[in-house]
Image (cartoon, rainbow, N blue to C red; front, side, top):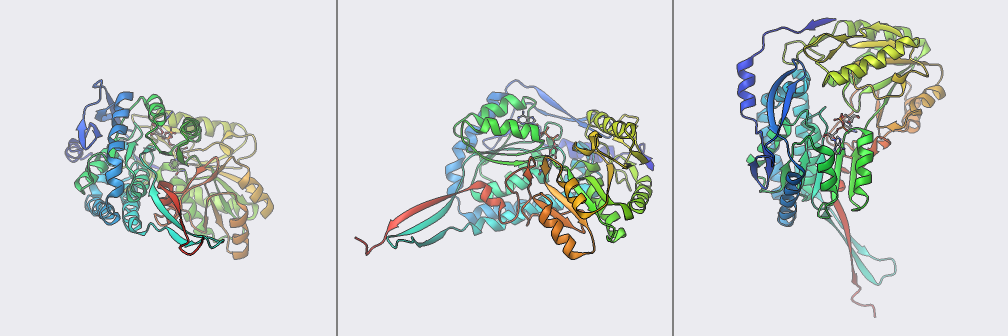
Length: 499
Ligand code: NAD
């Protein structure tokens, strides 16, 4: 494993980029100071250095943002769909032109390697383009009622002002995956990015403004008073929906807060993805798939393969080949050429990873690569492979969120299904087999919202992303995504000839 920690930084380029990023709240189309003039320090996790400070909103600032969203709702919902779509399309074009700036910004505030950050600009941008196209395809229906006494007209209307909460792991894509459908549907929003990575959302909203978004349609709140501010916003009767991406415990808390106001909710929560490899799998494809499913974003993805469930006959070779590739990985600052594994988001994440690895090794797991935190200043952990993970180890049940492969061995198909479904989560599953019928059986039996058959990455703006069980409710992207922000309205018109 090569660790790249001290290569020259292009400090002038970085300073130049950071100087152009807004550092205040965006409310009613104006960049404004936070009420108490407090700030949030943004840290580069690969150096531990402060790279920027942004406004730290108070509860009153959050309500001011909702005031602006509520005031803009009527006009935005009456803005022609074509106009809404064209603003999103212009934003998509601007984002493509600024791929390098957005990629570098994400690498600086979150740590992912630049190549992956560029990939996120492409992926995240697709939600703007996809929903630009969907804005003009919001269809209703029309037909006679079964009794023949009237005509039923079903139209789709925007839900109303929405509160969007996003996590730090995909600072751009998690924002566009919510903003795209909300704006296309005609909803106004207050968006709250994670306080660890606020810069990308601030830059994105400046870009939306440049693309022609009217004042008040999108409002941005960056805050460390997250719980209190969110409680106040969710308790305000003008809000109609909350869409959250983050951890399951926080999502559950938000569902409770949403109940008194009977809000529409979309919850994209935690994952514990099974990655199942059968003896008959194409081993090359399974190893490549495993690397993609585990190490993208340093394992900090809700879709990251968490449990590698591997059949006995292929397990030794799979583990050895994976460990060999993992030992050759270059760890370091994401801006450095050739780095494929960046830092974890903070030292707390490093400590948690060490706890999971030590617990597993202490209980008999076999360490094939890595296994330790890397000394600072950044928050790095060695890419790690653990074989013979078994019952009783925390790593088998918890979401790892780090570059750690945990291999669990199984004997037959029923065993694989049982292990895969032995989780409170159900976001995504991956299956590697060359037996197509077996693949079909697994797709049917593994309890998840998404499956990859012989692939390690499934995300696509045109597909419905989301989970079952404690992985959430609702879908983002695809034809389904826009319906999270629409309400069906039914009108009955009496038949002209009935009495
Ligand atoms: P988190 O739940 O700690 O934070 C997510 C967001 O919620 C942040 O903006 C945070 O500031 C905010 N938040 C925290 N406490 C809050 C509260 N009491 N009230 C309102 N908002 C609050 O999660 P995280 O650590 O940022 O992200 C990692 C988690 O997100 C993982 O569990 C991962 O699986 C999940 N995730 C899920 C998806 C998905 O689509 N299913 C995508 C990415 C991440």
